[in-house]
Amino acid sequence: MPSRKSFGKNERGLKSIMNDIYLISLIWVVIGAVVVYFVDKRAYQEGLMDAVLMHYRGELTYKGYYDDSGEEMVEIEVNKGAK
Image (cartoon, rainbow, N blue to C red):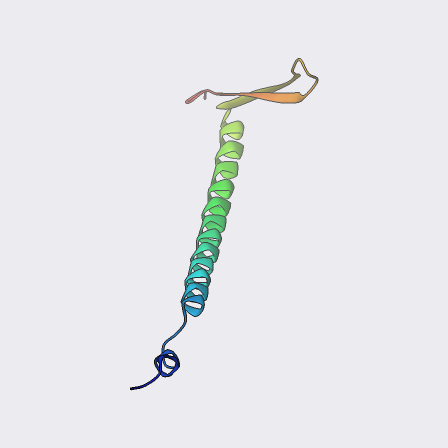
């Protein structure tokens, strides 16, 4: 009858399996972070372009002021179809 140790030589240990799970999880987190970065970057660029065009057309008005704690704030108002 073979000893218990001989069965364990060909089988992967639990620690090795957990390391694989951690590695796969890390890879998915990195992929997700890259996707979020590029989607947000594109959305920011499109939003900035929309704001510039709305300002040019007179649909976007804003005024700066200081709140009660002295922080500089901006109040933005969107008037669709101003021109």
